[in-house]
Image (tube, rainbow, N blue to C red; front, side, top):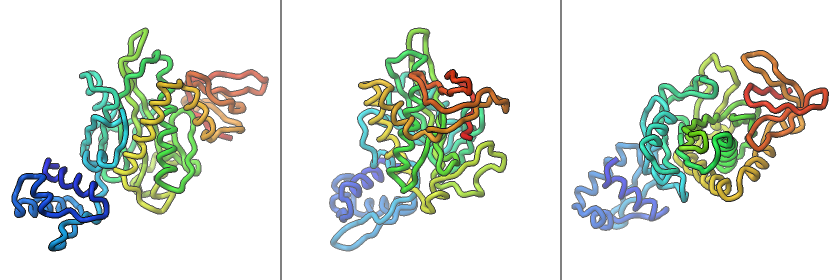
Length: 326
């Protein structure tokens, strides 16, 4: 998107529901009124619905559902997350892109958003279906001053941010499944994948990878999914504006991360446990299809490990595995 078009969009945002005069646009861009008209037509060609009324100017009626830099940033109000942002029409993996940027010195909060991924991945090397035009694929660079064994805490922070954003964008009530899934009515709507670069005594950076199924239809889900999946569209019956959802989610992440740095993992852990789908229930833990533990869910510890009370009364600390609520 050109600087001129981005400037016009900013003027529309500043005007709210009002009109922006052609004279103001001309003055801001330092171009003729004829050139202004060409830029308005460029917006229309990109899917923006712009009304023009003589003597009043231009009014933006609707924006297309695109994850452009201008659309997301125009809705974003954060202090750290998203100050630097890259929006790609397509990439192999937003996590891989963010990792490369972090290695090159990208500042904390740098965010990579992709409209589509050809090599999206989930936990334990599983494929994350990433079609274009319907979902949010997002990766954020963080550089917290914590020890490497504390990095998994940030996965739980991401899950809470996504759950909050879903509640803020729909009437749905999400739940969180250990360690990194967000569910609606028992079906997976979002997944988190964090990756890290660290030394023995400290973290260089952590990449928070977040994938949320927003407007996918049933036909767009792969037939061989291991876990039943859904989207906000399927569950609510209404499409979600992706740029607005991205801004809402990044805003929640910004607040949670600031609290995490100030107060530690405790508040995040407490909210995560309140939202967990296993509260007061029996769970089965398996690895590669083999059951490894069965007992009552007891929450998570300070490192994010799953705590399960076994039939003999002992509490087992579990770091890896797939969890199913009985």
